Length: 168
Image (cartoon, rainbow, N blue to C red; front, side, top):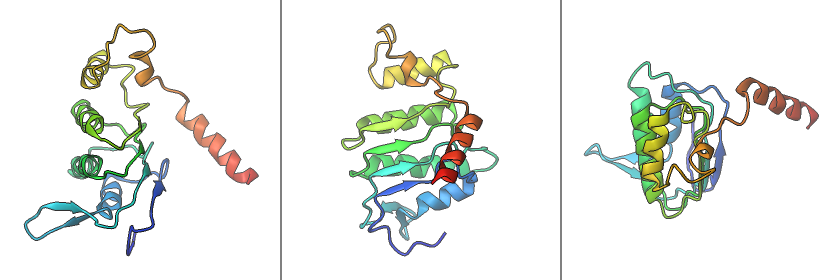
């Protein structure tokens, strides 16, 4: 993937693209600059407002998944223009999801984050930890369960998208 500038890129959606862990790292790498000391800075011209990465399932087969999560956390923390991110169905580990929610919760620009299909509805401890991060009372009706109720069968959703593309 070759990108000369992210100056005009405001919305990027690569959901369902079957990107590997290392490809996801490379993708997020276009938004940052690594300086000689090994530190990372956001590109000065970054205008990204919406990022869709959903259903590019992390395999955690090497360090690429951890690097991806670190880059994602950095972008969530530093990009003051980012308003929406979809990281549904990416197979995050418990601690990774907690870190993401904590950083996202501190963002002044982020208005929505999609976390569906990351085992939240099936993992009561994870759901409780996320509710704690967001200061949500789990006993309030319709709040805690709605954090991650799977909305569709991924294969069915892929078929619907494919059908819509054929119509267009």
